Image (cartoon, rainbow, N blue to C red; front, side):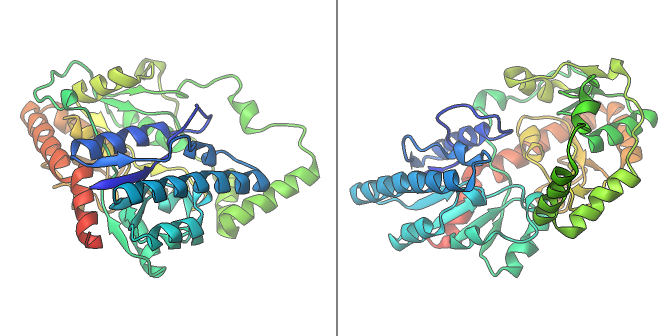
Amino acid sequence: MRIFLSCQQAQRRYPVPAYDFWEYYFKNGLSEAGHSLCEAAGVDWAEGLTPLPAAERRTWLSRAWESTLTTIRREHARQPIDLFLGYLYPGQVEPAAVDEIRGLGIPTVNFFCDNVREFRQVPPEYHAFALHWVPEFAALPMYQRAGLPCLHAPMPVWVPPSLRRKGRQESEPVTFIGSADLLRRDLLAQALAQGADLIIRGTGWIPDAGDKLAADPGGVGVGRRLQNQIEFVQRHGLRGWLFKLEQRLVPLNPPAIPASRIRPAVYGEEYFRVTQEAQITIGINRVPTFKRSLHRPLIYSRLRDIEAPMLGACYLTEWAPGLDQLYELGREIEVYRDADELAGKIQMLARDATQRHELRAAGQRRALNDHCIAHTLARIVERLGI
């Protein structure tokens, strides 16, 4: 197939978290599956992730989509394009342009991975797409209520063949890799208190002297504070404001995590190595959000639920809706529901090298065969009747 791809390609670096790896995953996964790719050279999709003022966003949208449409018309005339595949946020979408692409006979699909965290309902900009690739099981009712065609499929992850090697040594202890947030601190601190023997690698785990100042800046006038509250309610709704108030009145107070449990963050090849060679690799699926109380957090399956098994990790992750549709729990990956169960599962797996080996092999086989980008694209093709 010939696929036109718009997946957060950038012309320069931006201070925006977690966007640059999507291009790497999509391009490599689709190319390995034998598909040819085209894109709008020079279009900086990642710029659209930045907080542009309204006038600048309109200018950016016009420029980005004009270039995209020009490229699509030219390429489609030269050799037919079979599919438009995007990973676009609402503020990056120009519905009229998507309609024009569909008018050329090119089906349009958009992937988005944080629906339950970002949206209360499907954004109107998304209604233009012919199909929606939805990785979160809990987000499916949102699209169904809107009457929009959707496909529940895993996160699009690709790992190089050189990293798919089986039989990795266990040179690292039980490890969680990830940055700190309040929910992660609370969960891991409780698990440690229950006897879990684990190491944490990531940023933000050792408190900085400036943390309190950053969280509670002084000198903000009453008018600005009121405007902040109005803007917050407009974005998150009254329910979100009540959860924010709850966080102030009934805060989480996680126990301190001993410094001996924290090691430097890992990136690139070292991240892959630690994920593969940890005796057990831990996943956490709860996320801070003003959609839910911190005492009953929002939990949904994350990208690492695909990536870690692909890498051959012995993977123990937090239960989330839909995980049992991706894996046979207990045979391909293991799950926990709270800190007490996390500590218990770590102790159980640490004692059983045979089970760890079986989880590595079965989880990797399932992820590489059934959860790869090629497999999802085949389902998309079948669904669209291409």
